[in-house]
Structure formats: C-alpha cells, structure tokens
Length: 196
Image (cartoon, rainbow, N blue to C red):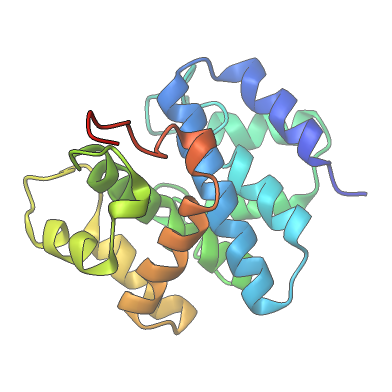
C-alpha cells in the first residue's frame, strides 16, 4: 500500500524545518498533482512523490553518497517505502544517481522540480508579491536572464518538458496554474496595496 499524504507530510516535517524548502515541496506536490490529472494517473501517489522528493535535503544538503538524494533513498528503504517512490526520488537527480527518468511520474518530477523554483522567484520579485500577476511571458522573460534565479537549471527544465513531450510554454503554464491553485499556502496571494 502506498503511503498517504499525511505520511509524506510527517516524513517531510521530521527532516525539514526551512520554510522555503517546505514551500518548494508543496509547490512540487501541486505541480505533480496537475500532471497526474493530465496523464490520468494516481494523483495521491504523484503528490506524495512531489512532497517528499527533497525531504532530507535540509538535514543532508551535500550532494553525493553521504547526502542528498542518497540519504533520502536510504531512509525511505529503511522505512519500507515502495520502490516506485524511491526510484522517482533517485530519478529527479539523474546526474547524481544515474537513474534516468523513465515513467511518466519520474519524468514529471524531473520536469517540474526546477521550474517551480523559477516561477516562485518570478512571483517574489513582482511588486504585488502575487503569483496571480505572473504570466508565462513573465517567466520566459526572466528565463533569459541567467543571473536571475541562477540556481534554477534552465537546461533541466527544457529537457524535462521534452521528456514529457509537452511544449515548453504549455509546461510553464501548467505548473504556473498549479502553483496559483495553492497561492495562499505559498504566501503568494499578494500584498494589499494602499489604494485597494
């Protein structure tokens, strides 16, 4: 039986205290749920994968055998989590683990992981701090500015969309819409202005 969202949230919050990392997990969960709906897949399972893909990163931030994502897969195995979830966690970092994304779930996780970070960064620099003021065109404009959200790997995002067979603009739009759906949770519903 697959772990529930509650199981995933407990695991995530056991290892992660950083509020930005928690928001990242929630953002990836929302994007994964959107892609599960698109592909007619198990939305709960995909959401769980999105929620826990970086669960141990706060505690083990070093990338490599003693850190992320290896420590995470070790912990998941010790707790008898399903291999499909463990493999997805490995496949979101193929350059580290050698696990190439194969299933639609793995490809989706790889495709949305970095993109959620870029979209959130675009929202945060809007004067309104509202994700509702972000458009696909505004993401594409910031995309070209390599100094903006420099840690967000554009090549991985492009590769992810290609793996899914989804045009890049459509991919950005889908993830943006998923994040708009949890704007309050992300703290990105916007700030009140003086003339509102």
